[in-house]
Length: 190
Image 1: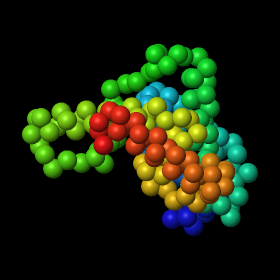
Image 2: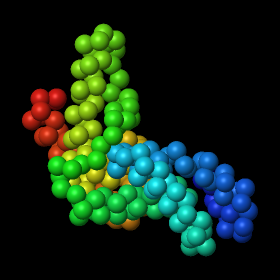
Image 3: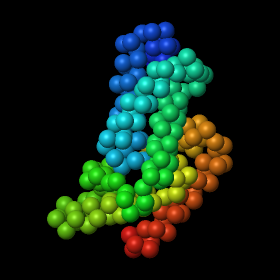
Image 4: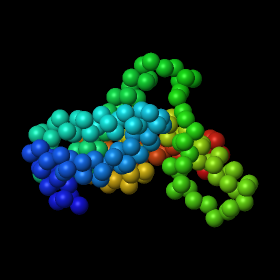
C-alpha cells in the first residue's frame, strides 16, 4: 500500500488530478473518523477533512517520499484537530460542550453477546461513559490514545504523526490509559 500511495503522491505533485482524487478516496473516511473521534462534531470533522486535503494539495511539493504518506496525512489531520480543540477551549466553557447524538456508534468495538433490551441499554450507557471519559482526557493524552486504540497505530507511527519521541508517546498512552481506568473505576464501569 505504501508504494501505491507514494506513487500517487508523486503523480499528484506533478499535476495528475486523478492521482490526487485516488488519494482523497483512500483517506477521506479515515481522516473523517479521526477528526470525529477527536472533535465529536460532524460539521467540524467534515471541515477538517476538507482542510486536510486542501493542505495536502497545496503542500504536495513538501511531501518527503521517504516518509509514509499515511503518516504525513494523519499528522496534518491530527494537528488541525488539535488546533480546533485549542480554539474551542478558549471560546467555550466546559459546560457549553458541543456534542451531537452520533457519538455512540463508533464504540461498536464494545460488542456484547447480549441482545436483550436491557443488555442493549446497558451497553449504550457504557459506550456513552467511555466516550465521555475519552472526551475528558487532557489534550496531550487524547490524540495519542485515539491514534493507539481507535486507529490501531503502533507507537512508532504515532511518534511520526505527532512528531515526538516514541518514549514520550509511550508515556502519554500509558498515562492516558491510567486516567481512563481511574475515571471509569470512579463511575463503577470497571
